[in-house]
Length: 252
Length: 238
Image (cartoon, rainbow over all chains, first blue to last red):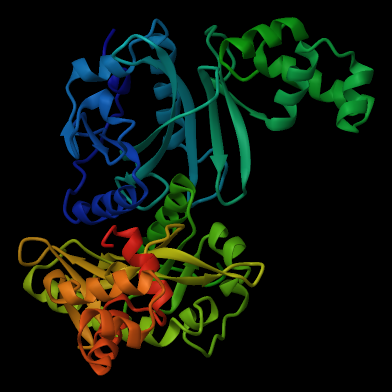
């Protein structure tokens, strides 16, 4: 397994300027210091990963250091599960999303998060939540390439690995990102709204359409509309097929 | 935001809103020179219950809306002092790392005041290396004592300064450490002794006890002995 963070690197058209970078990084460190947080900084241009931690619960992952540039071995330790291919697909999709302006607001204020299961030194499995956003683009305009990416690392109670989500901060909307894995003519990823995921969740619990309508205080026609739309976007033959696909990526 | 910003400023606004989301804390972006508010995160608006963006023509100082009246004069005084120090540091060493922390009471949306830690950090700089904008973070931490107003700078090899309300300036930690006799007085006060009783047991004059009590108040920025005892217990001094 290679380094999942750099499996598909971005193509930089110009060399980013490292001048004045110190200031925004040290703002992050000040915040992390006061909140005892742990985070990674990923430099896509230099292909380097730096780990910062003030959190005592996180030090068993990388040792007791304030700042450390990671080698491939310790990154593999972080992703020491059989699901490595899925995580590198997530990174690839994240780069794709950060590059474009999918929500159509010029500020590009959104963060992505996903769950990743990993192992403690004693062999017990636990779940990490990785929340990421672009700290620096190569330039301020909408053509900028994501260059420095921030990863917040924290332990989570959630059980499902995957659960790739996008949070639009200005619009205060949350989406689940479904990655299209079967190389069809469809887009590489689909944004599912919380309502759509909820419908799939209720169907997987064995509720009939009428029961779902009652539960969501919705309309039968609306529900059927959403379902047809969803099946087409997920490239699924039936709602069972859709549930299988979504379950694999940890949404329900 | 109605008015148009330069590319650099809108980049700072983007980062402030993202940091606020990622760290799960209220944040604001202010001008460094006159403290005027440029951007207020959603969390900050919902925490304080006051939307600065709706009050464009704010005549008072932006701090006066959310800071407790008792804390306001000293906060403004310290703010002025810190600005001078930070500006001086930047003359010596441009783009130096420095930040200022206040532990003060902040008004919440339900009109109650809650102790919070405020961290102020310069984020963008003029061409000459002096700070232009600053970011303010609000954190729910209860911590008092001499650490209430602290300044961290990178000059002189990374120093921590604390504010002394007696000298009206930032001083080193040594200067405002409690003396042995002051700790002794705190110990007696924690048992519920009055000033004459303390004087009698320690075999010193009443005026001297009063003098040291005032000195404790100044060092800890408190207004009563019970508050001082609480802080001393927090730091395990008594």
